[in-house]
Length: 196
Length: 175
Image 1 (cartoon, rainbow over the protein chains, first blue to last red):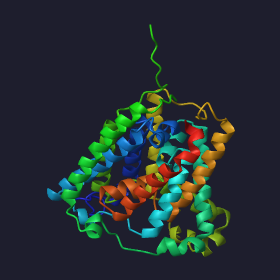
Image 2 (cartoon, rainbow over the protein chains, first blue to last red):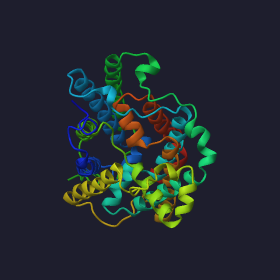
Image 3 (cartoon, rainbow over the protein chains, first blue to last red):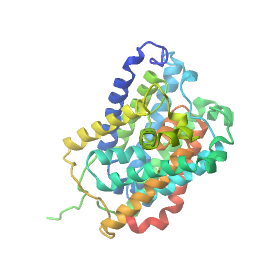
């Protein structure tokens, strides 16, 4: 029963090799979907290309539905998976800063790595920027510490926060996503095309 | 004959890419119990650089010292290996489609210099935000959403919500 590495079904020595293999697939999928192009990524904010939205929400839904099924069928214990912890204000403020960085720089860290791999100079500069950003955070850690460690709610899920049944949530989320996909296609047809 | 203008590169259908990415996330959780990540490797690099340049400073810092371990290098980390894989995978994909080359991609309406300045400042902001939120679009938002993490959903809404709010001010760079 999964997860395999934490449960010692696969010996931990394999961990780094598995990491590289998973990374290769991750990079291949992102690059093939066009995420090495900042102009394609930024399209989602201006309505001329919604690939980011479609890839992102399709991936979130496929993984969510798949994991719920695997939990239901007993292949993986969902409660033993790592749940990203909720630090309320850190998530909001950090997310907001990332949002400005996204629309200014045109990449997020994963997509910038794909662009670095194919030689985009703007992505190399962007990655150096990220490292400077990490450095600034680390040096000014005492300034950020109250929001970084405060407002901690634990490793909670929406089931805990909203008291919602996960299966109903996924069902409604899927319907919402399909409606959004149709709407964004209608928007794209009305927006002036941008070629890159 | 009328020539239809189209983009220089054609990419996968986004639903196909999203489906495969979803399968990969399921597989990653099934094998490792955790999700994917991207900014983690950059943090490890910064920790490793500071640790070799100024070991005493890194040791005494409240943040770097969290990631220092006497028995192994900060670069000996799952996310660093995964990131090496990302670079290889993207290189293979770009190589197959003939997209490899040194170039700066920017809108014809702006200069190369302007694009690089904005890329650098955007990177700084993203790096800072990803530390505050403990993860970026991959680690916090996407992998968080796969297990219904409340923090993952909040981070996702904050990233996209703010990006849409500020898109107007950066429009000249893109359209």
